[in-house]
Image (cartoon, rainbow, N blue to C red; front, side, top):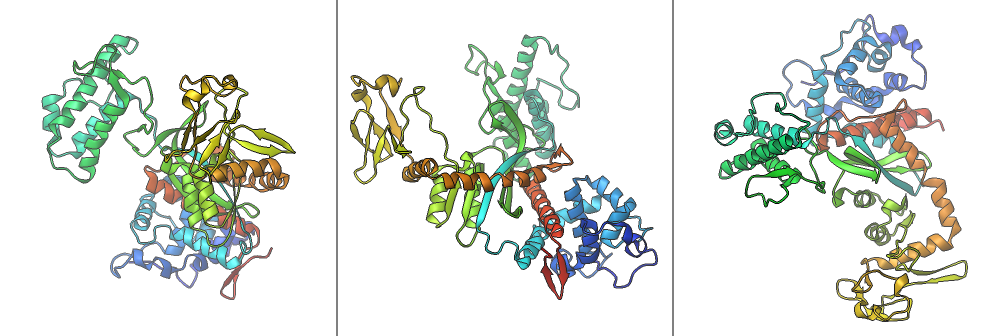
Length: 530
């Protein structure tokens, strides 16, 4: 059953005895005075539908603890210790000085209850309600978007470790797998917890081991192919097939039928990096900076720093790209907005979504790349009365005209092919190195992309607005992804749990932002001093 906070104070109530030691204006002091207004019991009643049994920790107390845990980036064990030993936590949560606190598993229990409920992000929703009531965003029509990579909670596994781990997972989760492993898997003793004992400095020994493990994986998948599986068992077998396929390729001079394999010389586009956390992915923020983990996407009001939307996705895949998630943020907003983003958000699809919704895009255009260094790009526009006349697109006529004044039609698939016409062209050396001539591929919203490049060149006020407001979201990203100068590392497995963490994280940061502006609850309403 759901527990509720007592109306009267205990004899050793921490707030009454040492509350004066907690700095005014801090998160601790705010929760001490307003946790029950922020997280009323009625908002959590559905988590405990039964009126029987031992009362839970009051919802206002546990929600406050989850906010503090996420804000301070503590583990469950560290959080339980803080609630037991830290006077500030006791004041914030209304505990008595001699309260022994709770077991760390209580936090797992509450997160599971929230995750399986109809409103899994109600802590975030509660803070959003406060934001709305204060009116801090009223009349503010700017939104800035950005993303960052958050390191996953597991170590990246090499190919050999992944293969062995995936086979062991099948052994644990698939009925009847143990008998099949004993029958068809001969490359390694999968009951042993340690790595295979080979000469790891010998390339031939490593190649032989990879071949043996891949053959075992393929044989096990084939042996269980006709078994009806569901849930975790089905996922375990599919993961084994995926790992064997993504990281291995036939050895040199082999087609794979002779059982000779090697570790693939290239990385699969959507490579699973760990069988412990199959949602984690490789990604790059730059060609030199490869990282593993998840991508955290954020939309924020740049003048106040209030986060208006957030989402954790896997770090790979077009559906998880910056512009794709920004379109989701766009759909969640009412009213006209000016959207600020760096060139990663300068796609035709996102610009089209912004234009169709009646919003304004203040997004730095993506730089154009010419096939020949210093040669012709696909653009034409005027900068300070100087005409850049490369390729001219006439959407009404459905044609593209090249710098040599040759016009070609745009095909149904939005391609203009110059082909053989390039052979005798005097400008060919400045245009293309292709033997088959130049080909122009146009995005369906090419008109918006071209207009964006013109506006960026012709309107200094647009560039000034971008430089003024877009960088502000980087500060928000820094607050989300770091604490005390230390880059945060995720503590949970899977996209769902880490997305819930991000929701709590942004809720805590928004609440701290509002507290700094004098947030209080008076006469039944949330108000700001500034």
